[in-house]
Length: 548
Image (cartoon, rainbow, N blue to C red; front, side, top):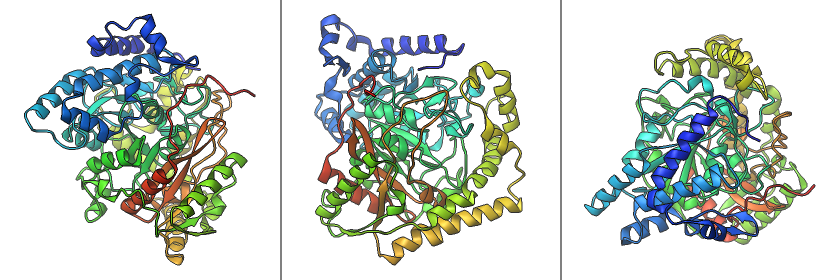
């Protein structure tokens, strides 16, 4: 169910008009018979079914051969957005469309014709989570009505890098408002600006958060790739729930400059795609030292411009993989899928060390150190970010709290802002309580966590189920979250890759590969090997519900 607000009619009218105009000739001539042909078994598969599951490499090959142009590709994705996101199953994953998308596509086509293609992302449409700034006619809102009327001063660094790589920023995706850091009772995928994002496999199921729209959009083939952000689970959880590959990079491998923050010690930006290869392509375009984000200095000797070199269909052969048994048990269905995945890893030639438990995870959770750090850092980091926005924008967390109170009928309709209020009560980052929590978290997550277990067993990676099958969306009571495996790596600032591992009642479940700092090359090799050995991913069917 979507939550309405006064901006919905104008926003949806703008998006519908933009999509219709942008699709142009691609929409012409598609009558009732053509749309009827897009339906299989009563489930809308959308127009341009040839786009379904097309990889970035395949799209590039077609554009290089002249079979496809960036403009035609962009038009086709816009038509799928119109039918699947705005009509049909109404996925509600796209918050706004770039009104210049077709114009930009034509420029990329002209460059290609002149022999000036910029690389593997040239002419490829990509959508960005709407907490990533773009200086254009699109919103940059973090899903909050408080930021609808303000503008960032420039593109986020990752957005600028994608443009320079020749990608077409097709639009912005819906998300859990403020990246799910507003209320303890929130429903993932809901924002005040756009309402509730749906899971494309079963529409009344939750897409998980907070990069919910980014997962749903790429899973439904509404774009070739997407960007999400993660503080703890917000890339890998929606990747698992919507059946896609998500890379949560090491903190500092990709810049957070121009990204609405939660925590400078944990936030990171990464790709969400349908294949490991596609995610590797996008990741390479995002890396590099950025003066606007001091954390990226640590990546200077660790970043790569092209992660495709690490793809290997035999990538599990000879690897040593640990099994974090203490990060299982979310549900019987999850455990069954995970057991099959571990067997597949072993059958693909890996040495499986079972168990290789992250024993410090329970102490980390019980300590409360992570949440304490996030509360302190959010208050400080959001103030620093808001100072960059245009005049009239809120400037502090206190301003945001007051805005929500003044607009409670829309912003606080389903759940409150308890986390905002807890963060507002915190002091500065010089407080001893903050510094102690930061030390405790890093000790338990790094020294006594991932670094210890990886070293003791000489492991290339540790695996665990990413999460459980998606739960029914419940705006009244909030998320019915059964568990996840992202927290130790989140607090450590270390990388994760979630890959589809199986289905339960038609709902995807992922497996997470976790490793040491800047171990993305190793994790990509292992994840691509697992993907090649299992081939789990399949396009969604947009079932309306599951029988109870």
